[in-house]
Image (cartoon, rainbow, N blue to C red; front, side, top):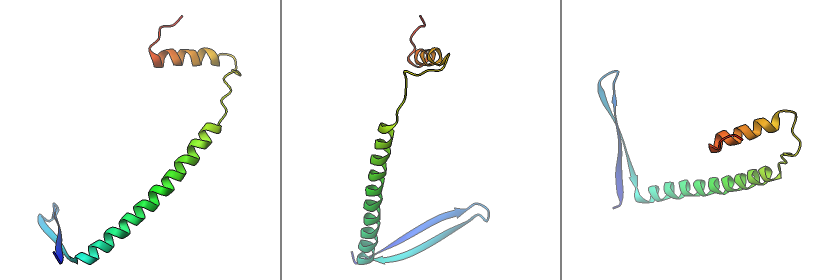
Length: 90
């Protein structure tokens, strides 16, 4: 197929009219467009993977000092844990 006609048709509710937009593309044009979009997507996925790796490393480096609770915090943490797991209180 040397070319294809793409059409976008939508209905305008305000004017009760149908609008049609048509564009004819040669196969070579569509191949170039697809290649460009795929390259952009691959670039994005690589950036996203790097971002997630950096984020995960940052989260792993965070220090949560469970051994240092202010008065009442341990009781609150235990109550929240019981509520989240459905465990009965002691």
